[in-house]
Length: 114
Length: 111
Image (tube, rainbow over the protein chains, first blue to last red):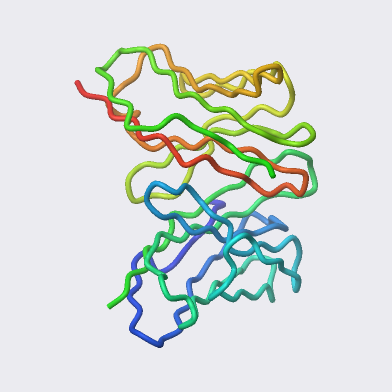
């Protein structure tokens, strides 16, 4: 089945530690996105990528980094500079060849601080 | 900038009641509009979409009509079920094709 796989489902971070969240898609989509979800705040865009080897900052990129070395993969690193990383992280992808295509989401990774 | 405003939740209904979740937007140009649903512990699933004024999106008994004159995209369902309990997000795609989300509305349906 085609879809988006996020791993792990739960992740714990120690003080001063960087952690990486995985996002893989087999939908052959060009664009990929990372969102952060906090209670009562909806989704906020962290980073997005429209094409391999290129990505742009979203609204809350500070303390995060990404790479896009392969079309199907868009890992997110939560660095120690992110002082409040506890949240639910969602990855999405979208077909860009046709207009107005919706984003498809993975099942998320819940990150907590130890 | 572009924005989406949804009604505050939770919305609490009895099974078979009529549902309306209000959504209004502010945008330059002519955005596409979406409703997504999120079940507990899961990601977002696309529920329906509309790409131009007066379009009606529909899926699983849910409907929403793109109203340009009132800048609204209200979600409706004639008869809700317990299984519809979830958080519903209204969203628009801006001129760069990024999604702008509302804050979400939690729906609780009781038997």
